[in-house]
Image 1 (cartoon, rainbow, N blue to C red):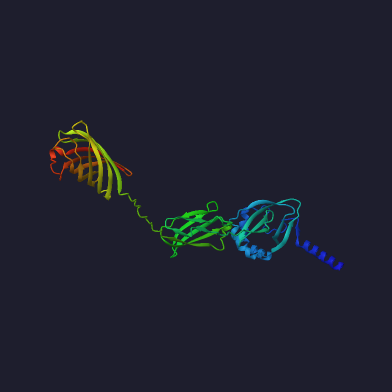
Image 2: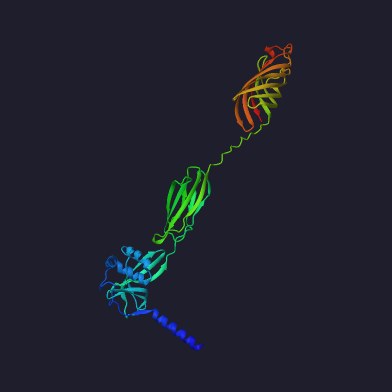
Length: 396
């Protein structure tokens, strides 16, 4: 058993040594004869020796890469580097005589660094790093790295928008992206809008001016023009705004009943003696701002003494409003205001003409004139029993 294990270890060691080929000298078998290769010569190699390049790539197991290599080397970013002792390459093309040959897993085992050109070729999501020693032009594959593919993550909010509400397009969750393009199409497939975004500016707002269904599609690109394997699509809908419901006007019911106070100077006919008077009462709205019923009771005091005396008077009137002005009429009564045969108490015909001076909330102030003329009651002539009043009325 120990003998078998020993043989296996020896085999693995021999295989490992055989898998690594040390190169201590370059230039003896050059792929391209030049002791001082220039970057421009690499493009010449691709053109003049395309057949031999193809043959070498196929021998190295990378035949699928040759056309990308021949095309991209014409515009590749070629850098100058040092190949140091101990550096490795996966394979190296060279020519022995006129035959193209390949060495795999090559280690540079020279005593000093050598100058080489370095560039990359991209194909199918992989980045191939090549070096070409300046002394021999041997094309060598150093590394192969996977390039992360771009992934698309699209958000559109809201999914159902009221007409006039902007849509927010968000591609910030996408990965490995260099640029993005968003296309908006209507239900018929017509393109409405195209928006270009970048990782630094990965959101946009979009306003659609028609009701309908739309499709928002995003495509993202990564490095080396890699395109996302699948685009992102989100369907959105633009709907009519809800009809505006105007609430019915709030009707504030006003109380039909109001109190009032009124008073002022006046004249008593006989010899037109002056007086002051005051009344209190109620005002009832029969028709808003048009027709009122007014009931008042009060009295007057003549400014002269005997035979004049204080008296009572009351009114029951209908008041018609015409904007700020009003006119009222009805019946009243007055008691005797002087000790004289021709002076008697009784029923009066009352007429008023006035104007509102102000209105605040439920309060109104007005100025009016009033004529009181005797009616119905016998032996009360107009000449001795009528009254003229000037009054201020406050309704509350």
